[in-house]
Each structure stands twice: as C-alpha cells, then as structure tokens.
Length: 455
Image 1 (cartoon, rainbow, N blue to C red):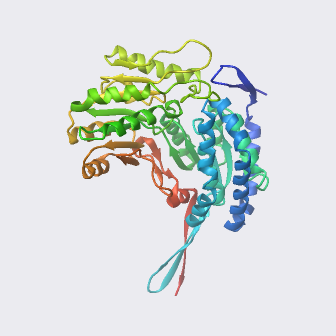
Image 2 (image 1 turned 90 degrees about the vertical axis):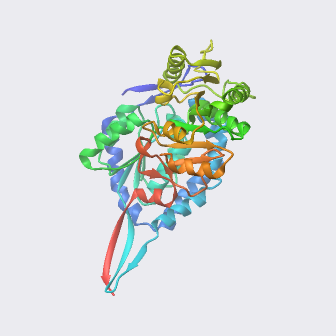
Image 3 (image 1 turned 120 degrees about the vertical axis):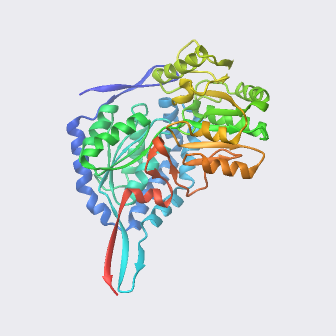
C-alpha cells in the first residue's frame, strides 16, 4: 500500500502520511455508490434535503475544527477559513431550497396533449475538487449531485486530504451507506475515477487538467461540468474612482495569497492616470504582510506548495527580464515555508508570459493602455480564458457597455464581480464547460425527461 505526505506549507513539515486509494478500493467504492443510488433517488426530495441539512448543521458545529485543518493543510488564514465555512453554513438551507426548485417539474400544453418535464438523476457523479477553497468547492459539487438524487464519489485535492476526509465524515454520517464515497490521491487516482463506472464528472481545477478529463471522458460520453482557471482583467479608465479601483486590484489579486480562480491577474490602466494608480496600488499592497495562517495581523498565508511558489517566481523573474519594472516585493524570502511577498509589477507587456498564463500567486500586474474603449475590450478578450472581468469608469453606461462586450461569465462594473445569490457561476471559452450554481447549474446534475399524454 502506498502513501503520500501531507505537507504544512507554512513550515514544510509533514503533517501526516495519507494512504492512496488503490484501484481495487476505488472500484469497490464506485460499485457501492452504484448499488446505493437507486434507493437514494427514490426518496422524496424532502427526505434527501433533511439528511443533507443535518450534515450542514454538523459542519457548523465543527467549523473551528475544520478551519484549523484548512490552515494547517493549505495555509489559508484561519479567519478566512472560518469565513469560507460560514459563507456556506449561514445560507445552507437556502442553497438546498434552490436545489429543490431545480427539481420542480414543468408542464407544457398543446391542443391534443400535455407534457410533463421531470428531472432524473444521472447516476453516479465523480466530484474532483481543488485545494484553494477546500470546503466551498466540494460543497458546490457534491451537494447538488447528492441533492438531485445521484450517488457521489468525492476526491479532494492531494494538498487537502484531511479536510476532504473530515467533510466526508461529517456528511456521510447522515447518509445511507455507499451513497457518498471518498477517494484519496493525486492525478493518477483522479484519472482512475474518471475512467471508472461513473456517469458524470464534476471538476474544479486547471484548464490543462480539465482538457485531459474531457478527453478521457469522451469514450463513454460521460456528462461533464468543468470549472477551470482564469486570467481575469481589470480595466481602469481615466475617469474611474482610482482609490476604489486600486483597492479592487490589490484585494482581489492578493486575497488567499492570490490563489483564486477569479483573481485579478491583468490590470489595464489608462495612460493618463497610470502613474497615480501605480502609487495607490503600491501603497495598498505594502500593507499586505505574510505569515502563518494562525498568526495575528497578517493578510496572507503561504502558497500551497514549493511547486506553486516556484511557478510564481518564474513568471515574475521572466517578466522582469522582459522589461517589466519591479515596484514592490518580487523576491523569495529566506526561511521555512512557501511564502511569497505581495508583489507589484509595472510596465508589463501584454505578450509576457505573466499576462498570458495563469499565475495563481500574490502579484498585481499593471499594463498601460491608451484609454480607448475599443482597445480596452480587445485587450480584455485577447486570452483563451473567460471566467471573470472587472471594469472601473466614471461613466456607468460605458461600464455596462464594455461589460457586455467582454467574453467572460461574470463581470463587475465599479465593483468586484461577485454576483447576487442564486446567480450561476460560468466559465466562458476555456474557463469552463457547463456551469455551477443557481437553479440552472443544479439542473446540470440531472437529465430532463419529457412524459407526454393526451388531453
């Protein structure tokens, strides 16, 4: 039996050795899910909802324990981990109500017949989740999977195996045996799960891994929902509220140490205000100190791994060699742990690697543009990604007009892109396939069935 080390990114020390799910164990877990699914689907939604709601209450009761583990495994500030959990548990019942609405039948009528459209579960769903939001992302996948009547096999990221195991323990305690399975391991276990006897793969992670999953799933024509990476732009026009735009740029480039799929990763600022904006960004970013997620008074924890820090360092170094200017940070600190300081780069070329490829680190990257609306739209759209975008301008109508032309799933105008509750979370172009959240997102875990009869 093989295992892998679970590393504390703040110290580099091993927390635990995690046993890797063997191929035989994985097949058994999927078989158990398949065997349990029909009876689970036969329950009325109110019965499934009650069991999932009880799991949500258990999570709320154990929030501090879960948050402690999140900080140890991936470095997130404990206060942020608690907010991540509360963001779900405070609205848990509303989320379950939304799943219920997704399952409500629809009746259509013609002259001679009536058609009732019902929603059937797909069967067994594989939920493969990332490490950066190790509570929120699993819930985003396995709750609608289970709520709509599917069984689910859950594989957390290898960077947060203990958080994943604890979530599984909390919810499976309320569920029938076999309905909710767990697999542990890295990419090879994820690949085996995609190849297994499952009907759907729900995945949140990188674009590259999403493409591999799509290719592997194609042989069985398995249903897919893939939420993938982003390279989100922030457009700052000359008439914008520069204080507010700079706060958005810094906060949403640096929060969670930049490890957010919808981080602000490209800032295009009008030439006329670029110098003032750079000063504001540097001033605000300087206040973002780093340290252990358990420490008081820090704003960022470590990056999740040495590999992730090396990737950020390579991109920053490459940008500087290509002609970017270092305003702040940009150097790996001495000592244990995978820390990286808040970094601000100016004069970043639109063709630099750091502008083209996802960074996933605490870097504010500033690029100047003429201030012309057409150029702003062209620069924002010149990417294979399309997750989110942000626009700051003193002309709200221009902001809305530009937002409609940006090819992304979410756009914020004079505010960060966060949507109202019930909105779907959509990755356009290569930032996603299918989408999550909202009634329509939950329905992607089902198949509509039309039953027609004469009237």
